[in-house]
Image (cartoon, rainbow, N blue to C red; front, side):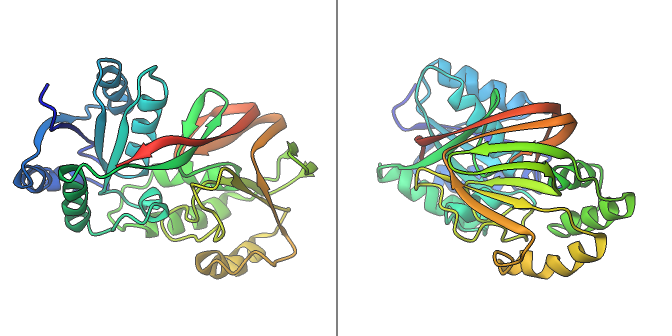
Length: 299
């Protein structure tokens, strides 16, 4: 393998198919910088992760992923599950692109591709960011149980090409079905909750769902994550909170509890939905989270 070779993993379905349509231009921009690119399209859910894991196991040191938060999630799990080390570069071509926002990566995909190519060509030193581990999976931007996980599940079923508005529509559909408030026991470094709640979100970055500034204080390089617990609320109250969630002005609301954390345990009476980086997880009753400081190199 040539020293200047990078491996590009692209999910053609990311961003409702936008990533696939942009693939020729992404390759062109990378190769114009003198970079030798080996291209690996994702064939199905989980395929990007397995390909990344295979290549990192074989000694590949630089992984570039073009896609959304789901693609980043798979790439991070592929890297973290290997005994070898590899740095990650991201070209945002998804719907929400929350991870890109947290890392100050330009949301203009062409601009992001050019900047990444320049950094690789100049052999610039990667920066380090934190990663979360939630049971046996890793996440780069956020994890959640309760209402937001249910919204994520609904959003996955919507095929309309309406960008970030997918998540807003999913909220309205979820509200129509009714709000569940599972009884949970949450134990973190210096905080305990026991009882019903609307949601518990664990944030490594400030944004979720593309348009919701849920954790304005979150930084993915400070060695901790932000826990936000929302007490039981009505449908009407959720609707009144939405504009504040979009603007990051909800932190002083009486229903919102915030704590910085480095570890967390959650137990539910019944199996509940959860998500990692917007990816729906199997129903579970127990969750254990740990923060892995400086665990990932970002190109």
